[in-house]
Amino acid sequence: MEPRTFDGGADRPGSARGDTGRVLVIGPYKRVRRGDPDAPTGNNGIRNPAARLEEAAGLARAIDLTVAEAVIAPLSEIRPATYLGKGKVEEMLGLIKAHDVGLVVMDCALSPVQQRNLEKEWNAKVLDRTGLILEIFGRRAKTREGTLQVELAHLNYQRSRLVRSWTHLERQRGGFGFMGGPGETQIEADRRMIGERISKIEAELKKVQATRRLHRAGRQRVPYRVVALVGYTNAGKSTLFNRLTRADVQAADMLFATLDPTLRALTLPHGGKAMLSDTVGFISDLPTMLVAAFRATLEEVIEADVILHVRDMSHEDAEAQERDVDGVLRQLGIDTDSGQRILEVWNKIDRFDQDERDNLANIAARRPPERACFPVSAITGEGIDALLAAIEERLAATRVTLDLTIDASDGAGISWLHRNTEVLDKHLDNGRFAMTVRVDESKRDVTIAKFGAIPASH
Image (cartoon, rainbow, N blue to C red; front, side):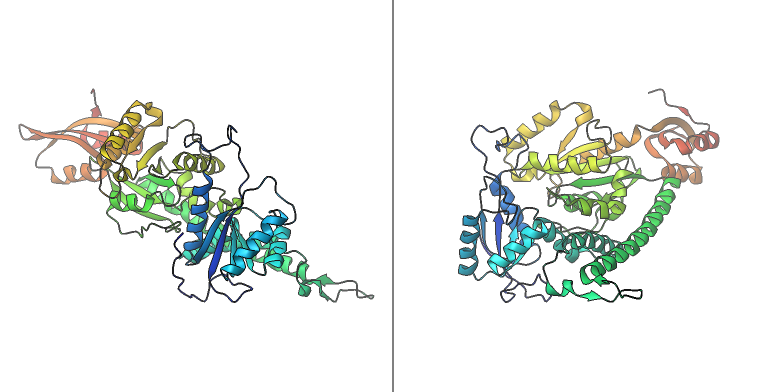
Protein backbone atom coordinates (compact mmCIF):
# COMPACT_ATOMS: atom_id res chain seq x y z
CA MET A 1 0.00 0.00 0.00
CA GLU A 2 1.55 3.32 -1.06
CA PRO A 3 2.09 5.70 1.88
CA ARG A 4 0.87 9.27 1.60
CA THR A 5 3.06 12.23 2.52
CA PHE A 6 2.27 13.61 5.97
CA ASP A 7 2.00 17.38 6.10
CA GLY A 8 3.32 17.74 9.62
CA GLY A 9 0.26 19.57 10.90
CA ALA A 10 0.42 20.39 14.59
CA ASP A 11 -3.10 19.15 15.26
CA ARG A 12 -2.59 15.56 14.17
CA PRO A 13 -3.23 12.73 16.67
CA GLY A 14 -0.30 12.49 19.07
CA SER A 15 1.67 9.39 19.94
CA ALA A 16 3.88 7.98 22.62
CA ARG A 17 6.66 7.27 20.12
CA GLY A 18 7.63 10.72 18.93
CA ASP A 19 4.71 11.90 16.77
CA THR A 20 6.10 10.49 13.55
CA GLY A 21 2.69 10.64 11.84
CA ARG A 22 3.21 7.07 10.60
CA VAL A 23 0.30 4.75 11.22
CA LEU A 24 -0.25 1.00 11.22
CA VAL A 25 -3.82 0.07 10.21
CA ILE A 26 -5.07 -3.24 11.59
CA GLY A 27 -8.23 -4.99 10.40
CA PRO A 28 -9.19 -7.37 13.22
CA TYR A 29 -11.93 -9.27 11.38
CA LYS A 30 -13.61 -12.48 12.46
CA ARG A 31 -12.60 -15.55 10.43
CA VAL A 32 -15.25 -16.71 7.96
CA ARG A 33 -15.11 -20.30 6.71
CA ARG A 34 -16.04 -21.32 3.18
CA GLY A 35 -19.74 -22.07 2.95
CA ASP A 36 -20.54 -19.86 5.95
CA PRO A 37 -23.67 -17.73 5.24
CA ASP A 38 -21.66 -14.66 6.37
CA ALA A 39 -18.94 -15.26 3.77
CA PRO A 40 -18.62 -12.40 1.25
CA THR A 41 -19.88 -13.40 -2.18
CA GLY A 42 -20.14 -10.00 -3.84
CA ASN A 43 -23.94 -9.88 -3.86
CA ASN A 44 -25.06 -10.74 -0.33
CA GLY A 45 -24.30 -7.39 1.32
CA ILE A 46 -21.44 -8.86 3.40
CA ARG A 47 -18.25 -6.83 3.41
CA ASN A 48 -15.06 -8.06 1.80
CA PRO A 49 -12.17 -7.94 4.37
CA ALA A 50 -9.74 -6.44 1.84
CA ALA A 51 -12.23 -3.69 0.96
CA ARG A 52 -12.86 -3.03 4.66
CA LEU A 53 -9.13 -2.68 5.27
CA GLU A 54 -8.70 -0.34 2.30
CA GLU A 55 -11.54 1.82 3.62
CA ALA A 56 -9.90 1.99 7.06
CA ALA A 57 -6.61 3.02 5.44
CA GLY A 58 -8.52 5.66 3.46
CA LEU A 59 -9.94 7.02 6.71
CA ALA A 60 -6.41 7.37 8.09
CA ARG A 61 -5.24 9.14 4.92
CA ALA A 62 -8.23 11.50 5.18
CA ILE A 63 -6.46 13.20 8.11
CA ASP A 64 -3.10 13.24 6.31
CA LEU A 65 -1.50 10.32 8.09
CA THR A 66 1.12 8.15 6.39
CA VAL A 67 -0.07 4.56 6.23
CA ALA A 68 3.14 2.59 6.82
CA GLU A 69 1.33 -0.73 6.49
CA ALA A 70 -2.21 -2.09 6.58
CA VAL A 71 -2.74 -5.68 7.70
CA ILE A 72 -5.64 -8.03 8.34
CA ALA A 73 -5.52 -9.79 11.71
CA PRO A 74 -7.97 -12.73 11.48
CA LEU A 75 -9.79 -13.49 14.74
CA SER A 76 -11.43 -16.67 15.95
CA GLU A 77 -12.75 -14.86 19.02
CA ILE A 78 -12.57 -11.40 20.58
CA ARG A 79 -10.45 -11.19 23.73
CA PRO A 80 -11.97 -8.96 26.46
CA ALA A 81 -8.59 -7.57 27.58
CA THR A 82 -6.90 -6.71 24.26
CA TYR A 83 -9.41 -7.63 21.51
CA LEU A 84 -6.59 -9.51 19.73
CA GLY A 85 -5.04 -12.72 20.97
CA LYS A 86 -1.66 -12.64 22.73
CA GLY A 87 0.22 -13.93 19.68
CA LYS A 88 -1.30 -11.26 17.41
CA VAL A 89 -0.49 -8.52 19.93
CA GLU A 90 3.18 -9.59 19.87
CA GLU A 91 3.17 -9.89 16.07
CA MET A 92 1.79 -6.36 15.70
CA LEU A 93 4.40 -5.06 18.18
CA GLY A 94 7.08 -6.32 15.78
CA LEU A 95 5.49 -4.38 12.91
CA ILE A 96 5.20 -1.24 15.06
CA LYS A 97 8.90 -1.35 15.88
CA ALA A 98 9.93 -2.24 12.31
CA HIS A 99 8.03 0.72 10.81
CA ASP A 100 8.70 3.16 13.68
CA VAL A 101 4.95 3.63 14.04
CA GLY A 102 3.57 6.16 16.52
CA LEU A 103 -0.13 5.51 15.97
CA VAL A 104 -2.14 2.31 15.50
CA VAL A 105 -5.64 2.34 14.01
CA MET A 106 -7.85 -0.63 14.92
CA ASP A 107 -10.75 -0.97 12.47
CA CYS A 108 -13.22 -1.97 15.18
CA ALA A 109 -14.87 -0.55 18.29
CA LEU A 110 -12.58 -0.92 21.31
CA SER A 111 -13.66 -0.72 24.93
CA PRO A 112 -11.72 1.79 27.09
CA VAL A 113 -9.93 -1.09 28.83
CA GLN A 114 -8.91 -2.74 25.53
CA GLN A 115 -7.61 0.58 24.19
CA ARG A 116 -5.56 1.24 27.34
CA ASN A 117 -4.11 -2.27 27.44
CA LEU A 118 -3.05 -2.15 23.77
CA GLU A 119 -1.39 1.24 24.27
CA LYS A 120 0.62 -0.23 27.16
CA GLU A 121 1.61 -3.32 25.15
CA TRP A 122 2.63 -1.37 22.04
CA ASN A 123 3.85 1.88 23.62
CA ALA A 124 1.91 3.75 20.91
CA LYS A 125 -1.32 5.67 20.71
CA VAL A 126 -4.29 3.51 19.66
CA LEU A 127 -7.38 4.81 17.88
CA ASP A 128 -10.43 2.68 17.20
CA ARG A 129 -12.80 3.24 14.26
CA THR A 130 -15.07 5.60 16.20
CA GLY A 131 -12.17 7.72 17.39
CA LEU A 132 -10.74 7.93 13.88
CA ILE A 133 -14.07 9.03 12.36
CA LEU A 134 -14.39 11.68 15.09
CA GLU A 135 -10.90 12.95 14.21
CA ILE A 136 -11.94 13.31 10.56
CA PHE A 137 -15.18 15.07 11.45
CA GLY A 138 -13.24 17.44 13.71
CA ARG A 139 -11.02 18.40 10.76
CA ARG A 140 -13.88 18.75 8.27
CA ALA A 141 -16.36 20.82 10.31
CA LYS A 142 -16.36 24.41 9.05
CA THR A 143 -19.63 25.98 10.18
CA ARG A 144 -20.60 26.78 13.77
CA GLU A 145 -23.30 24.11 13.60
CA GLY A 146 -20.93 21.44 12.30
CA THR A 147 -18.36 22.28 15.00
CA LEU A 148 -20.99 21.97 17.73
CA GLN A 149 -22.21 18.64 16.39
CA VAL A 150 -18.70 17.19 16.24
CA GLU A 151 -17.86 18.47 19.72
CA LEU A 152 -21.02 16.90 21.14
CA ALA A 153 -20.16 13.53 19.61
CA HIS A 154 -16.55 13.82 20.79
CA LEU A 155 -17.57 14.62 24.37
CA ASN A 156 -19.95 11.67 24.49
CA TYR A 157 -17.12 9.45 23.25
CA GLN A 158 -14.64 11.00 25.70
CA ARG A 159 -16.97 10.52 28.64
CA SER A 160 -17.01 6.76 27.99
CA ARG A 161 -13.17 6.76 27.93
CA LEU A 162 -12.76 8.23 31.44
CA VAL A 163 -11.38 5.11 33.10
CA ARG A 164 -9.02 4.98 36.09
CA SER A 165 -5.91 4.74 33.99
CA TRP A 166 -4.01 7.88 34.91
CA THR A 167 -2.61 8.86 38.32
CA HIS A 168 -4.11 12.37 38.27
CA LEU A 169 -7.58 10.84 38.23
CA GLU A 170 -7.00 9.40 41.71
CA ARG A 171 -6.63 12.82 43.41
CA GLN A 172 -9.44 14.03 45.61
CA ARG A 173 -10.67 17.47 46.46
CA GLY A 174 -11.98 18.49 49.87
CA GLY A 175 -15.63 17.86 50.69
CA PHE A 176 -18.20 19.70 52.74
CA GLY A 177 -19.29 19.22 56.35
CA PHE A 178 -17.53 19.06 59.71
CA MET A 179 -15.56 15.89 58.91
CA GLY A 180 -14.52 17.05 55.43
CA GLY A 181 -15.76 13.90 53.70
CA PRO A 182 -14.02 12.00 50.89
CA GLY A 183 -14.59 14.87 48.45
CA GLU A 184 -14.82 14.53 44.66
CA THR A 185 -12.29 12.48 42.75
CA GLN A 186 -10.75 14.06 39.64
CA ILE A 187 -12.48 11.52 37.37
CA GLU A 188 -15.84 12.57 38.84
CA ALA A 189 -14.97 16.22 38.32
CA ASP A 190 -14.00 15.52 34.72
CA ARG A 191 -17.28 13.69 34.13
CA ARG A 192 -19.23 16.56 35.68
CA MET A 193 -17.45 19.17 33.51
CA ILE A 194 -18.04 17.11 30.36
CA GLY A 195 -21.71 16.68 31.34
CA GLU A 196 -22.10 20.44 31.79
CA ARG A 197 -20.50 21.14 28.40
CA ILE A 198 -22.73 18.52 26.73
CA SER A 199 -25.83 20.19 28.21
CA LYS A 200 -24.67 23.59 26.93
CA ILE A 201 -24.00 22.28 23.39
CA GLU A 202 -27.35 20.46 23.28
CA ALA A 203 -29.07 23.74 24.20
CA GLU A 204 -27.22 25.56 21.39
CA LEU A 205 -28.12 22.81 18.90
CA LYS A 206 -31.80 23.19 19.87
CA LYS A 207 -31.50 26.83 18.74
CA VAL A 208 -30.00 25.60 15.46
CA GLN A 209 -32.94 23.22 15.02
CA ALA A 210 -35.38 26.04 15.72
CA THR A 211 -33.66 28.21 13.08
CA ARG A 212 -33.81 25.35 10.56
CA ARG A 213 -37.52 24.95 11.25
CA LEU A 214 -38.04 28.66 10.52
CA HIS A 215 -36.10 28.35 7.24
CA ARG A 216 -38.08 25.25 6.34
CA ALA A 217 -41.36 27.02 7.09
CA GLY A 218 -40.24 29.88 4.83
CA ARG A 219 -39.53 27.46 1.99
CA GLN A 220 -42.92 25.83 2.48
CA ARG A 221 -44.60 29.21 2.09
CA VAL A 222 -42.89 29.80 -1.26
CA PRO A 223 -43.16 26.72 -1.50
CA TYR A 224 -39.99 24.91 -2.50
CA ARG A 225 -39.89 21.13 -2.48
CA VAL A 226 -36.74 19.59 -1.01
CA VAL A 227 -34.67 16.88 -2.69
CA ALA A 228 -31.95 15.39 -0.46
CA LEU A 229 -28.83 13.51 -1.51
CA VAL A 230 -27.76 10.63 0.71
CA GLY A 231 -25.26 7.87 0.19
CA TYR A 232 -22.11 6.17 1.33
CA THR A 233 -19.14 8.48 1.75
CA ASN A 234 -17.23 8.98 -1.53
CA ALA A 235 -20.19 7.76 -3.63
CA GLY A 236 -20.04 10.99 -5.66
CA LYS A 237 -22.83 13.00 -3.99
CA SER A 238 -21.04 16.35 -4.15
CA THR A 239 -20.03 15.83 -7.79
CA LEU A 240 -23.66 15.01 -8.61
CA PHE A 241 -24.78 18.03 -6.58
CA ASN A 242 -22.51 20.27 -8.65
CA ARG A 243 -23.76 18.69 -11.89
CA LEU A 244 -27.44 19.16 -11.00
CA THR A 245 -27.18 22.71 -9.60
CA ARG A 246 -24.13 24.07 -11.44
CA ALA A 247 -22.66 24.84 -8.04
CA ASP A 248 -19.03 24.63 -6.95
CA VAL A 249 -19.16 22.56 -3.78
CA GLN A 250 -15.92 20.80 -2.81
CA ALA A 251 -15.84 17.36 -4.42
CA ALA A 252 -12.82 15.12 -3.97
CA ASP A 253 -11.90 11.44 -4.17
CA MET A 254 -11.72 11.34 -0.39
CA LEU A 255 -13.76 9.92 2.47
CA PHE A 256 -15.94 12.59 4.12
CA ALA A 257 -14.86 15.39 1.75
CA THR A 258 -18.20 17.08 2.55
CA LEU A 259 -19.40 17.45 6.13
CA ASP A 260 -21.47 20.61 6.49
CA PRO A 261 -24.84 20.58 4.67
CA THR A 262 -25.36 22.67 1.54
CA LEU A 263 -28.62 23.82 -0.10
CA ARG A 264 -28.91 25.08 -3.68
CA ALA A 265 -31.77 25.70 -6.12
CA LEU A 266 -32.48 22.87 -8.56
CA THR A 267 -34.13 23.74 -11.90
CA LEU A 268 -36.45 21.00 -13.19
CA PRO A 269 -37.04 20.23 -16.92
CA HIS A 270 -40.28 22.27 -17.17
CA GLY A 271 -38.93 25.28 -15.29
CA GLY A 272 -40.06 24.30 -11.79
CA LYS A 273 -37.76 24.84 -8.81
CA ALA A 274 -36.76 22.63 -5.89
CA MET A 275 -34.11 22.83 -3.19
CA LEU A 276 -31.32 20.26 -3.43
CA SER A 277 -29.56 19.35 -0.17
CA ASP A 278 -26.12 17.72 0.00
CA THR A 279 -25.50 15.94 3.32
CA VAL A 280 -22.70 14.19 5.16
CA GLY A 281 -21.81 10.78 3.74
CA PHE A 282 -22.66 7.63 5.66
CA ILE A 283 -20.25 4.81 6.43
CA SER A 284 -20.39 1.30 7.85
CA ASP A 285 -20.47 1.17 11.65
CA LEU A 286 -21.18 4.91 11.79
CA PRO A 287 -21.04 5.72 15.52
CA THR A 288 -24.53 6.08 17.02
CA MET A 289 -23.40 9.23 18.81
CA LEU A 290 -22.59 10.81 15.43
CA VAL A 291 -26.02 9.96 14.03
CA ALA A 292 -27.57 11.56 17.12
CA ALA A 293 -25.31 14.62 16.99
CA PHE A 294 -25.97 15.23 13.29
CA ARG A 295 -29.71 14.78 13.59
CA ALA A 296 -30.22 18.56 13.18
CA THR A 297 -28.36 18.44 9.86
CA LEU A 298 -30.09 15.25 8.76
CA GLU A 299 -33.51 16.79 9.40
CA GLU A 300 -33.27 18.00 5.79
CA VAL A 301 -33.29 14.31 4.80
CA ILE A 302 -36.12 13.45 7.18
CA GLU A 303 -38.30 16.26 5.80
CA ALA A 304 -37.31 15.84 2.13
CA ASP A 305 -39.99 15.20 -0.49
CA VAL A 306 -37.61 13.07 -2.56
CA ILE A 307 -34.45 11.30 -1.38
CA LEU A 308 -31.76 10.44 -3.92
CA HIS A 309 -29.74 7.46 -2.68
CA VAL A 310 -26.45 7.84 -4.55
CA ARG A 311 -24.48 4.60 -4.98
CA ASP A 312 -20.97 4.00 -6.33
CA MET A 313 -21.75 1.06 -8.61
CA SER A 314 -18.06 0.59 -9.45
CA HIS A 315 -17.20 -0.27 -5.84
CA GLU A 316 -16.73 -3.95 -5.04
CA ASP A 317 -18.77 -3.55 -1.84
CA ALA A 318 -21.65 -1.64 -3.45
CA GLU A 319 -24.27 -4.06 -2.06
CA ALA A 320 -22.91 -3.82 1.49
CA GLN A 321 -22.76 -0.03 1.24
CA GLU A 322 -26.41 0.03 0.18
CA ARG A 323 -27.31 -1.96 3.28
CA ASP A 324 -25.34 0.43 5.53
CA VAL A 325 -27.09 3.52 4.12
CA ASP A 326 -30.49 1.85 4.50
CA GLY A 327 -29.61 1.13 8.12
CA VAL A 328 -28.86 4.79 8.88
CA LEU A 329 -32.04 5.93 7.09
CA ARG A 330 -34.05 3.53 9.25
CA GLN A 331 -32.37 5.01 12.33
CA LEU A 332 -33.71 8.37 11.18
CA GLY A 333 -37.23 6.91 10.93
CA ILE A 334 -37.36 6.79 7.11
CA ASP A 335 -39.19 3.84 5.56
CA THR A 336 -36.75 2.45 2.99
CA ASP A 337 -39.02 -0.41 1.94
CA SER A 338 -41.94 1.55 0.45
CA GLY A 339 -39.75 3.40 -2.08
CA GLN A 340 -42.29 6.23 -2.37
CA ARG A 341 -39.72 8.92 -1.55
CA ILE A 342 -36.48 7.22 -2.57
CA LEU A 343 -34.85 7.13 -6.01
CA GLU A 344 -31.65 5.11 -6.39
CA VAL A 345 -28.91 6.81 -8.39
CA TRP A 346 -26.38 4.33 -9.75
CA ASN A 347 -23.38 6.62 -10.10
CA LYS A 348 -19.93 6.28 -11.72
CA ILE A 349 -21.06 4.27 -14.75
CA ASP A 350 -18.29 6.04 -16.70
CA ARG A 351 -15.95 3.50 -15.07
CA PHE A 352 -17.66 0.63 -16.93
CA ASP A 353 -17.27 -0.47 -20.53
CA GLN A 354 -20.26 -0.34 -22.89
CA ASP A 355 -21.37 -3.95 -22.29
CA GLU A 356 -21.40 -3.43 -18.52
CA ARG A 357 -23.36 -0.18 -18.94
CA ASP A 358 -25.93 -1.93 -21.11
CA ASN A 359 -26.26 -4.64 -18.48
CA LEU A 360 -26.85 -2.05 -15.73
CA ALA A 361 -29.42 -0.28 -17.92
CA ASN A 362 -31.28 -3.59 -18.46
CA ILE A 363 -31.31 -4.33 -14.72
CA ALA A 364 -32.59 -0.82 -14.01
CA ALA A 365 -35.33 -1.12 -16.63
CA ARG A 366 -36.63 -4.33 -15.02
CA ARG A 367 -36.94 -2.78 -11.57
CA PRO A 368 -40.54 -2.06 -10.39
CA PRO A 369 -41.56 1.65 -10.38
CA GLU A 370 -41.50 1.82 -6.57
CA ARG A 371 -37.83 0.74 -6.61
CA ALA A 372 -36.75 2.92 -9.55
CA CYS A 373 -33.05 3.39 -10.19
CA PHE A 374 -31.13 5.52 -12.68
CA PRO A 375 -27.63 4.74 -14.00
CA VAL A 376 -25.73 8.05 -14.28
CA SER A 377 -22.28 9.55 -14.43
CA ALA A 378 -21.96 12.74 -12.42
CA ILE A 379 -18.63 13.35 -14.18
CA THR A 380 -19.82 13.10 -17.82
CA GLY A 381 -23.52 13.95 -17.33
CA GLU A 382 -24.74 10.67 -18.82
CA GLY A 383 -28.23 9.77 -17.54
CA ILE A 384 -28.78 13.13 -15.78
CA ASP A 385 -31.75 14.16 -17.98
CA ALA A 386 -33.64 10.95 -17.15
CA LEU A 387 -32.91 11.48 -13.45
CA LEU A 388 -34.21 15.07 -13.52
CA ALA A 389 -37.37 13.94 -15.29
CA ALA A 390 -37.93 11.27 -12.61
CA ILE A 391 -37.41 13.82 -9.81
CA GLU A 392 -39.93 16.14 -11.45
CA GLU A 393 -42.43 13.28 -11.83
CA ARG A 394 -42.12 12.29 -8.17
CA LEU A 395 -42.54 15.89 -7.02
CA ALA A 396 -45.54 16.27 -9.34
CA ALA A 397 -47.39 13.40 -7.65
CA THR A 398 -48.87 15.84 -5.12
CA ARG A 399 -49.45 18.66 -7.65
CA VAL A 400 -52.44 19.59 -9.81
CA THR A 401 -52.36 20.05 -13.59
CA LEU A 402 -54.55 22.90 -14.95
CA ASP A 403 -55.52 24.15 -18.43
CA LEU A 404 -56.05 27.87 -19.04
CA THR A 405 -56.01 30.56 -21.72
CA ILE A 406 -54.49 34.00 -21.32
CA ASP A 407 -54.23 37.03 -23.59
CA ALA A 408 -50.82 37.22 -25.26
CA SER A 409 -50.55 40.88 -24.22
CA ASP A 410 -50.91 40.04 -20.50
CA GLY A 411 -47.19 40.02 -19.79
CA ALA A 412 -47.65 40.33 -16.00
CA GLY A 413 -49.99 37.30 -15.91
CA ILE A 414 -47.70 35.17 -18.08
CA SER A 415 -44.74 36.17 -15.90
CA TRP A 416 -46.68 35.20 -12.74
CA LEU A 417 -47.43 31.78 -14.18
CA HIS A 418 -43.78 31.16 -15.04
CA ARG A 419 -42.71 32.19 -11.52
CA ASN A 420 -45.35 30.29 -9.57
CA THR A 421 -46.16 27.22 -11.67
CA GLU A 422 -44.50 24.67 -13.90
CA VAL A 423 -45.46 25.49 -17.49
CA LEU A 424 -45.88 22.13 -19.22
CA ASP A 425 -47.21 23.44 -22.53
CA LYS A 426 -47.80 26.84 -24.12
CA HIS A 427 -48.93 27.64 -27.67
CA LEU A 428 -50.45 30.69 -29.37
CA ASP A 429 -54.01 30.42 -30.70
CA ASN A 430 -55.75 33.53 -32.18
CA GLY A 431 -53.90 36.03 -30.00
CA ARG A 432 -54.25 34.01 -26.80
CA PHE A 433 -51.91 31.53 -25.16
CA ALA A 434 -53.35 28.12 -24.38
CA MET A 435 -51.31 26.86 -21.43
CA THR A 436 -51.07 23.71 -19.35
CA VAL A 437 -49.48 24.33 -15.96
CA ARG A 438 -48.74 22.28 -12.87
CA VAL A 439 -49.26 23.94 -9.48
CA ASP A 440 -48.88 23.09 -5.84
CA GLU A 441 -52.09 22.50 -3.91
CA SER A 442 -51.46 25.70 -1.96
CA LYS A 443 -51.66 27.79 -5.18
CA ARG A 444 -54.39 25.83 -6.94
CA ASP A 445 -57.27 28.08 -5.86
CA VAL A 446 -55.31 31.30 -6.55
CA THR A 447 -54.48 30.13 -10.10
CA ILE A 448 -58.09 29.12 -10.81
CA ALA A 449 -59.43 32.44 -9.47
CA LYS A 450 -56.84 34.51 -11.33
CA PHE A 451 -57.04 32.85 -14.74
CA GLY A 452 -60.22 30.78 -14.76
CA ALA A 453 -58.15 27.62 -15.02
CA ILE A 454 -59.77 24.19 -15.08
CA PRO A 455 -58.33 20.76 -14.17
CA ALA A 456 -56.53 19.26 -17.17
CA SER A 457 -58.37 16.47 -18.94
CA HIS A 458 -55.18 14.81 -20.23
